[in-house]
Image (tube, rainbow, N blue to C red; front, side, top):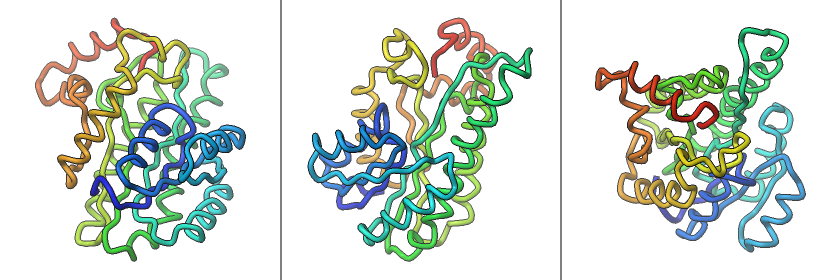
Length: 254
C-alpha cells in the first residue's frame, strides 16, 4: 500500500498497536476510521484527534460487522484499505478443559472469524477500487509457540495461512494482501505486557512498521527486525532453540 492518500478502516484500534498505527497513518496524510466495541473510548478518540472518524462494532459479532461495514462505506465510499487489527490473547491451561474451552472458542471467534467476516463485508467494495489493500495481523507466535497461549498461537497461524491463500486468489486484481507480523509489543494485550522488558516499546514498533510500509509498498509481510528471530527459526534450522528461548524468556508475552 502507498503510505499516504488512502482511506483506511481499522477495526480494533481503540488502544494498543491499532490506535498507535491509526494516529501515525493519519499523520502521514490518510483518512482513518477507527472501529471498536467501547463507545466511550471511541468518543474520546474522536474528541482528542479531530479528523479521525469512528464506528462502533464488535468483531466477534457477525451482525455488528455487517452493520459497521454499511456505515463505513456510506460515509467513506472512497475506502481502499482494510486493516483487520482486532484480536484477543489469553493464558490457558489445556490440562483442564473446563478452564480453557470457553477461552479458546472466544479467541477463535474474534481472531479468526472476525477477520474472515470483515474481509467478506468489504471485499466486493475493495475489488471495485483502483488500488486497494487488505492488511491482516498475525504474530511472531504464528511461527513459534508460546506454551501459555495455545489458542492465540493457533489463531495467528491460521491468519498467516489465510493471508497466503487469499493473496493467491486475489493475484491479478487491484487488491493487495499484506500481513503485519508483530513481535511482543508493550501493550495491554496481556496483564503485565505493557511493562515487559522483553516486549518491544510501542513507539519503536510503530516507527519501524510505518518506515517499512513506506519503503516496501508491495511487501507481502511487514516484519520489524525483532520478530525475525521467531519468524525464521524453522528456516534457519534452529526452531527448537527459538521455542526454548521464547518460553524461558517470557511466559506471558506476545
